[in-house]
Image (cartoon, rainbow over all chains, first blue to last red; front, side, top):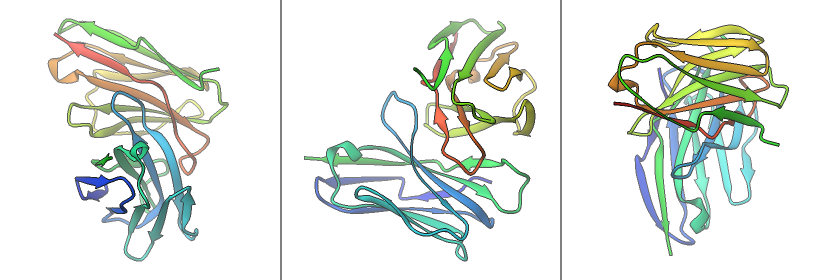
Length: 112
Length: 112
């Protein structure tokens, strides 16, 4: 079953912050975050593994709460280049190896 | 050098035809994937191959068949194309399911 992302869309002014949530009904082994710009392929942002720590990439960071089976992506001091659709992908701890699912995506629009 | 390449980039065909999309990765990865992204931008995993063996096969019609001649290639064959097959198909690869996935540029399939 695919993870659930929220919100579906968010509009930000440059410099504002946003949080994107990803939750699963199953125990998770890993959570991946990708960003896709219009007409392009998804691009990797970061992976959080079970038992791992919070990660960050420039002003984009993420956390993984194993007990709650959810992850959050934090966009801090957003830039115009942050616009795109953000997908979380999850690998379940209980399913067979390699069962990877993407959420429906969160569209982020950053305006000047 | 392109890490993950797909051909063709665009494919326009008639209903009922059979077509193939090729994918090659030069990263030495053990796992390759095929995704379908529909008009609503949902990324649905179709197949996952690890060391030439099918790991998962989602509820995809058997008109779709992956073929992996070697670890670096995962081709997608589609028989009896239907209107609903129109989408962008992405190939991706990773070292393992817990590692970053590298996506190809996508193939936009249009069935008339």
